[in-house]
Each structure stands twice: as C-alpha cells, then as structure tokens.
Image (cartoon, rainbow, N blue to C red):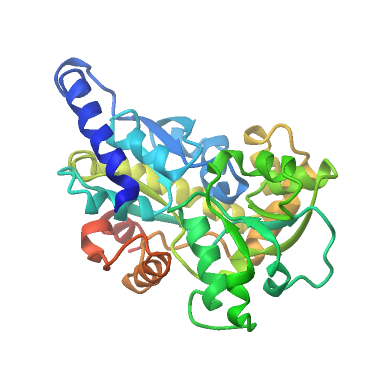
Length: 342
C-alpha cells in the first residue's frame, strides 16, 4: 500500500482545505458533472459518443471533461473534490479503500473489460510473440497502474484468465520491464531512448506513432490478456448515495453511446468521435474503432462481476502491490448498473 500513502496524506490535506466551501456555501449544480479521465483515448469511445451525440444533454446533464494523465492523478482529483466522477483503473479504488479513507471511492460502472493498449516497436517485427521481448526493454506503464500490472502478468503467467498461448519460461527474467515512466510520458520517453525497443500505448497515440513513422503496432494486449476489469467510472460513496439519480443518468447516457457504436458501422462511429479527436482522420479513427470492436473492449453490461474482480486481485497480487484481496463490496457498488440492465 506504500504507493498510495502519499496520496492519502495529500487527500486529507486537500479535504480539510476545501470542505468548508464545497459542502457549505458553494451552491453546486449536481447536474453539471466534473469528470476526470485517466487519459484521452479512443478506448473510451462510448463516453465520447455520448458527449458528441448529445446523450448527456438528453439526460439533463452537462459534463466538463479534464485529463488526469494517470489513474493516480485522477483519484487525487476525486478525493480532493475537484472531480465528481473519474474514469480510471479500478486498482485505484482498491488502493484508496485500503488507505482507510472514510468516504470510500467506489466503482459504479465498468466501461472496458480488457486491456486497451498496444505493443509498439521501433522496428518492424513480423509474427510478433511475447518471446520477442526477451533481451529487450519495454516501457509498460506506471508502477502500480493496471497497464503495467497486466503486462507483467502476461509476461510471467500468460493470459490473465489462465489460458497460456505461449511458453516463456525463465525468459521473463530476461526482459527489462520498465514501470518508472509517468503514464502520459510513455511515448516521448520511448522514442527518445535508443535503448528501448518497445512500449505500450493506447489509441490514438499508437496510431499517431505509426503515422509519424516512429514505430509499428505489433500486438494488442487486449487479445493477449483476455477479460479483466480495466477502466471504470468511480465516485465517492457519499456521491452515489446523495446523487444516485445523477449517477444513473450519467451511466444511461454512456450506455446510449455504447449502443450507437454497436448499431452503426465503424465509419459512422468515427464521424461521431471526430470532435473529440480532431487531429486524427476519419480513416484513422475508423481503424481504431475496429481494433477495439475486434477485442470486444467495451462492456455492454456495466456491472462488474465478482469473478472479474477476483481476476483483478490476482493480477495485483502477482505484481506485489497488494498482499491480500480486497472485499468486492468494499470497492464495487453495482446498484445503478444493475438497475439499468434490468
């Protein structure tokens, strides 16, 4: 739990500093939601479709979106009351619950259920396999973050659900696995360090690296990892209790975004995403959407299951960032998600 101890101290300080304004006299409009996302990626397409197609507005909501540049930073924003809801990895809720914060942040909707990153190499590698990482360096994400822990699990154990499609044996010890780079700096550090052949990137950054002639996408970690609760909507327990109607409208709008994606072809979806990714062409967005559809990245049912939560626990235990499994009900609240699927 050392990863989040500094966060815990910071949270206490921030909460004391702003509690008076936030709860006493600010007159907050809860139909305006401050949403902090871990990063800006086509991986979260249902959210952006919901924004761009006006589904939040249909629910009477306004969503102000900010970028945390990492799940840890997004969680700090939530605990410090600068965000109402965050879109981040569920591991952050596990860490924070273990810190003993009284108003526990809880997962109330699961957006993605597999790894959404891609292994990008500077050189072209035909028929890439995990064994190709032996003797090489890969930047796999931030220490304690789910991208890094999932890749570590794949390297050491195979598919996170126990299905091994390859044998790497002791080769895992010969891979220089780096988790010392801030999430939002991965691409630049990878490119500038000549000793690093591989990194993991989400879309559209991965495609941008290819477009700029800097690298090649050689594998989808979603295909390699299999199902795992990966990116979720998280809010404080008090928010879910006091403003459950707002949280329900929020999830309902995202579900509309999901349905739009599955009811239309990838070009139409790309056009709906264009406003959120103005530097990418329709064709680039179309390819990214198809890549994520191919691995069934998005959750139709936004309720996290106890079985998938247990998979998350196994991945975190393997990375040695927790020493025991958390209780499912202490981290996940499926009340709203279950209501919407009924």
